[in-house]
Image (cartoon, rainbow, N blue to C red; front, side, top):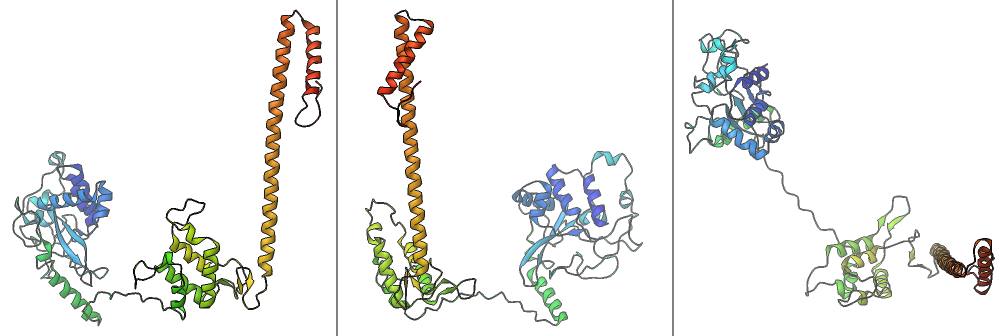
Amino acid sequence: MSGVDAAAYVMRLHLPTPAHKLVLLAVATRCDQNYSAFPGRALIASEALVSEERTKTLLRELRRDGYLSARQRYRSNGSKTTNRFFVHGPWDQWGGTNHPFAEISYYQDHDDRYAAIREGEFIPRPTLRLPAKGGVADNPCPDQGSPAPGAGVVGNPSQGSPTTPSPGITHNPSITNQQEPTKGNHLPDVRRTGAGGKESASSAAGAAARTAGATPKSRSPKAVTPRPRKRPAGWEQVAAALPREVQPARAGGRLAPTLIRAICDALTGIPGSAPGTYRIPPRTPEQLIARINRRWHQARGPERTAEHYTGPDPIRRPVGYVADLLTAHDCPDPSCEDGLIINTGRLCATCQARRAEQRQAEQARAELEERLTCDAELSSAHDAYETAAAREGHQMRERLAAAGHWGALLDHEVETHMRAWRHQHPSPNGGSHAS
């Protein structure tokens, strides 16, 4: 229940800001029986609703004022991990200073569960030596030398056994045995001390390793350097046949890694997911050279990669274009090379059928586009014709009304005129319309 006791006591304290109390409370709620905990800075920041940089400052101020002490922890391989924080309070004579921290005025006028401590009736708690967790070489007890009962951090007046009181840690609020904190030096370096230095951590790790029968010496993992892919036979021939637009700019230079991978894949092939299929079928160097020359020049590669080319589909990245050109294979038949069977030279039936379907689809698309264009033009012409007819009928009605024609006579004469006008101006849909 040390975490509950420590959290209850932190709530009594009169701290400078709410952020100080939230940070100290985040540590206190995780305390073990030695009133120590090792939460990470990110966790403390998230619970205290402040940034990690602000959390670092708040922890430093809490250590300076004696509310906390810190000890550096090390893993079994010697690397650093989160600090172990010790919360000071009545259970350790306020860090060995015997000077109580300022508390909220409310508790000064009511029952005080810690009054017995200040009056000398302190009942300490036996120190428990906790095993290291996760391979961390750290002893949570501040008194590292003596496992005797009553040593280390003392307990709560409501818990523990009646043993001899022990002052616990020294008068310095920091358990690292450094000098008193001053204005210029308020953050001791716990890495250089005997309690939390690398020497003691390494010796503890070595002792634990010897106890388990393992080698105490820890080695950092060896860096593994990936070896370059072995280039298949004929690679140099294909590389020399690549277009000059993708060749190295200077003599003796290296090709782009994308082209190197593409040539290797095209020479060795990549099997597909189904048995007997290829995502990229293998080709001989001669077949790849013929493919480069055929596809590059048929697509007008030299012209489209020119700097001043202004036509359609310019090639802005020739390296990627040539890499795709080397590995592109659309036909499911691995022996097909751009519509021809390699061994026989016959046309590929699959490619022929696919091209016939493409031609039919293109023809159907062209017919549909033509029909839609025709319908749109016809609809536009019909709208223009109806607009002209309405304008002619309105003008004729105004002229007859100005001449004194009214009623049924006016309607009859306008209808007669429009019938004659439609006969003279046929509709775009064909034929004349009688209104």
